[in-house]
Length: 117
Picture 1 (cartoon, one colour):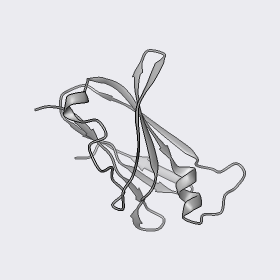
Picture 2 (cartoon, rainbow, N blue to C red):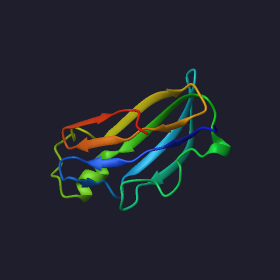
Picture 3 (cartoon, rainbow, N blue to C red):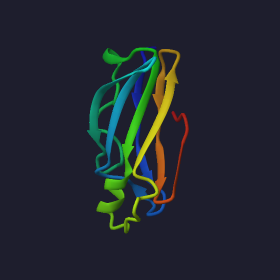
């Protein structure tokens, strides 16, 4: 099986997918952090394509950076100064050639993630 990476974002406070949320993907190698791409979630809260497709997949450490503050502001959530959740990084490792699904469950004052399927 070839490896690949997917993600999606659900707005748990509003009970809907988080559309229009910017996500960046970085590869981590020691102290080096290399940006691989930037995408925006669609109406289903997912990316239009695998965020890391099979032909780009490599084992190693990665980071997804979710730009939640901009999304929350666009949804009309009044900003505090500073906003409690603005940029949410999730660093994780991929140790085998498999499907990795790393979703974000988001509200203005909390989030969670897990390895999905």
